Image (cartoon, rainbow, N blue to C red; front, top):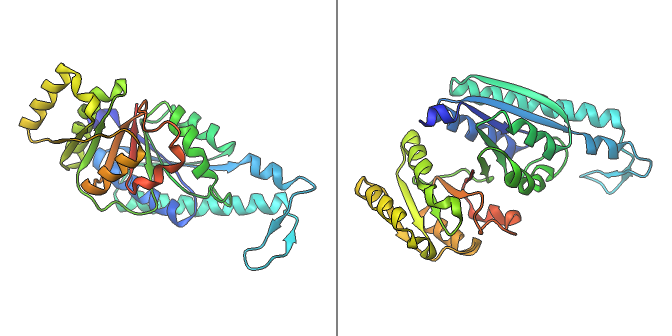
Length: 272
């Protein structure tokens, strides 16, 4: 079932060191899901527009001298960054023998990612990144993309995951009651154990209780902890050391905490 659902994995790539690791991790996941890997690099039109303003200035990394950026030079640099990102993605795809495509677009980063996500089954992106020379531009786009993307979004931190289980968080959000089902299918596809984390308030659904009991009988592990905010979830992640964590897109844990998602220190799959 997972192979049919995840036919195309879209990854937002850049030429930063973290961008290269994002491409590698996305390729590894695509191999396990038997999915096509599609890379996207966005040439930030807002950055290019700002470079052309009369008052625009940039400061060198090794000096304090201010200089006026040149739009043509900025565009050449972005094209070079795109080429390096393409090579990183193609190298990762070749390593895992994947079908792959790579596309460069020009526009506002968040809008371009959301538009491309309409043709994908899963979108992977780094929690921090460059998108060329845009500093943490991609990182600041995480909140909008995670909230509005039409497909599940996998957020990858700079550190590579070393844990083993898939962790599914069943909290008080309406969609969380069925979250363990795609989590179980994903765990089977990735050949990893599944651990279901059930919040105290989520234990009132009799049907869910019965389903989870059947899952436990089939080998799924489960624990009940008061997961109500990002701090308690971070503690649970630190304790369970998961390969990745699944959280429903309507989870109250996400509300107002998007900027701190990197504190989880493991890949986060926002499910919808």
